[in-house]
Length: 135
Image (cartoon, rainbow, N blue to C red; front, side):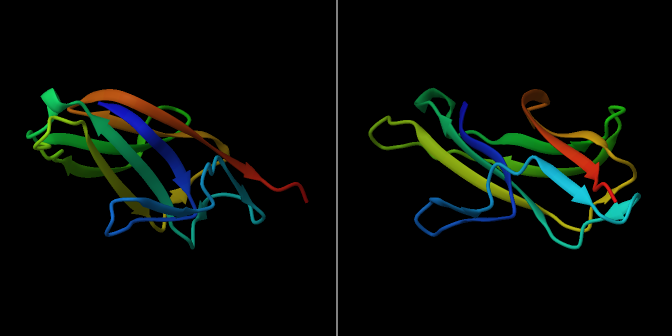
């Protein structure tokens, strides 16, 4: 399996045609004008679009997305099952999914991460800087 897209976005969805539709992709920084802790009033979308070679299709894979604090503790976790279908002509299979993380509380400023695990092995890490706006 390889990632075609792995990003954080302000909004995202998978269309009926299987394509990813997103707004505000490549999100990597949140700024708080009010100090900490801060709870987001908007969702943060994790967008993953993966390509599975033919020999990896037709199986279920457990995906977990962890929001990780700067000290390494897991702040929140989201589970998903990826089931790449077998292509009749042996082509690789594309699978996309979106997770909307809503109402996340960030206890302090720092360098957070979104960690993606595929069958318990970490396969992707996206950084999310959380900063206080200078007053």
